[in-house]
Image (tube, rainbow, N blue to C red):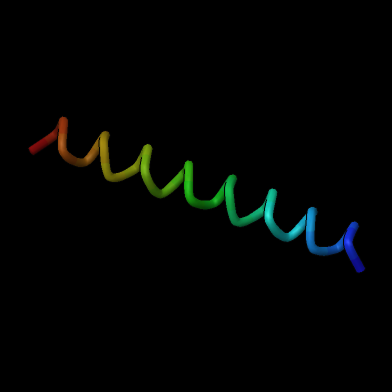
Length: 30
C-alpha cells in the first residue's frame, strides 16, 4: 500500500512539473 502511494505521489509530481514547464513556456511565447 505504501509502495503504491509512493508511486502515485511520484506520478503526480512528474505531472505537476510537466504542467508548470508548459505554463512557463506558454508565458515565454506570449
